Length: 318
View 1 (spheres, rainbow, N blue to C red):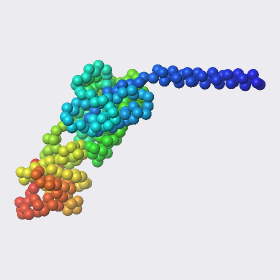
View 2: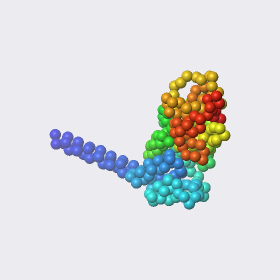
View 3: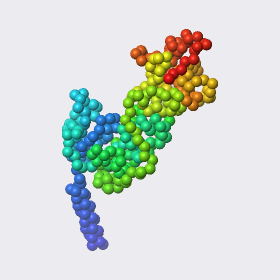
C-alpha cells in the first residue's frame, strides 16, 4: 500500500511540474505588442479606452501611441484622453508604416463602405446593421478581409447618436477580443463578398434639405434620424429657410386632395405637419426661421399661418 501511495505522489508531482513548465513557457513565449492607434471620433475614443485598459491591467501591450491627423492647436477628445493617460501623440502622415492594420467599421461590410456608414444605415431604413472588424493596409480602406462581424437589429426610431454609441461599444469589444487572440484572429480572416456592395460617401449640410416632391414621410423621418445631432432638417417656407425639429410620424390616412408640401397646424398633436410625396404627413414639434430662435409649433402657427385669410391660407413648403 505504501508503495502505491508513494508512486501516486511521484506521479502527481511530475504532473504539477509539467503544468508549471507549460505555464512558464507560455509566459515566456507570449507576444507583447506595440500598438499605434488611429482614430478621432466617438467610436475611436471608446475603442482607445478599452485598449488602454488592457495596457494598464494585462501583460499584452507594451506601448500604446495615438496617431492623429489633427493639425489644429485645439485638441479633440481623443487627443486629450491620450495626453491624460501618458500616451505619445504622433502625427499623420509623417510616419513610415509598412505593417498591416486592423479597422473597426460600423457596418456589415461590404454594405456601406465609406465615410458615413451609420448615417446611411439609418437614412435607408436598414432594419439590421452591425460592426465589422477587418484587415486593411495603408491607403486601402474598407475592402480588406473580414476578421469578425456582429449583426445588430436597428430600431425604426433609433437616432444617430444612440446607434453610434451602441456600435461603438460592440466595436471596442471586438477589437479587444482580436488583440487577445492575435495572431489567430488575423489568420482566420475571410475575403469580403463581391455581392451587396454599397457606398456611404461623406455628407455635408446640403443633405438636410428636404425634397418633399421626391421623399415619402418615412424617408423624411429616416433622414431626420440619420443626421440627428449633426444637422436639422431644413426647408423653404414663404421665401424663408426653416429648420425643423422633434420630428415624428403618426398613423394617418392619405390626403390626395392636398398638394405635396402642404404645411399646416395639427391641434391633436400640437405640431406643424407637412405633406410628403406619398401623401402622408410628417410632424414637427418645433421650428426655427433662420436668424431667429426656435419656437414651438403652436407659436409658429400663431406667428406665420393663423393670420392669413382662409381663402388664401394654402401654405406650402418647398
